Image 1: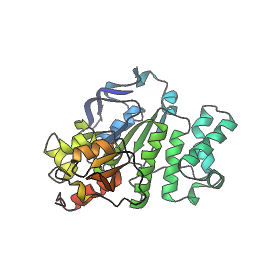
Image 2 (image 1 turned 90 degrees about the vertical axis):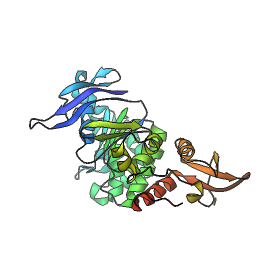
Image 3 (image 1 turned 135 degrees about the horizontal axis):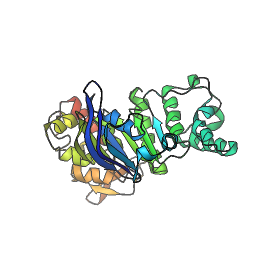
Image 4 (image 1 turned 45 degrees about the vertical axis):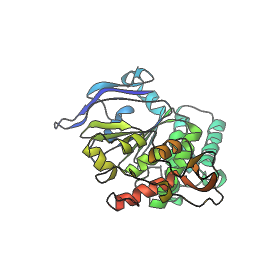
Length: 317
């Protein structure tokens, strides 16, 4: 879908922001770029839609060089969500969402129906929200509108540059959960920049960890947690040791309650087995001696990792 070949960005002051990176992002993949400040992750993202021009190398979308696309055609077919969502304050929510479809000359009825569909998709009642102005929405609601505005013209690719980092923890967690649910529905190719490893683990199909403009390690969340390639990766992931390397399922089990799940896993399961199952299932039933004794879900794993980070990598053993 998106292929980087020796993509490089140099600036006139001699700074190399991105240094000859080569990798491929698969169609329908949730791909997360992560790393410390100044590592080149945002520059890498912006090179995809030519907001930042390449100095050397090439990026292909569906086998075609991005330089061969008409710039308007390229950007209309790539949704873009920023940390500062920048909704137009004088426009209604419907008008904000309609910008790209109008530029692409959709008819009014189709635009109206698309706005209704998208608002419903993120839990905003169309009759209530379509005529409101951005100032009448909370930060989390504005960010939801920012996400669906990027989806308005049904692009194949969505770029997201730290879209949730300015939100309070509750709103951020809610939007992360919304993105997981939304991606199952829309199946877009999403390239997502964050500096938060917990967010990357929660959202990503694959993670690309960068440092000094180069790719240090790329893989699934499980691969990076379990097999860091060097001390930098290990430290970035978890304060000098593998997070959850001695995780016990009993430490993260939750009461059964009214939980619904389609797959079970034994209480003796390893971290690798848990993560492998949670990559395709939101929630698992925990089985012991033939009985279901509780559940575990992605959010509970994230909370466990977070507690380890706060304790300097210590586990609950």
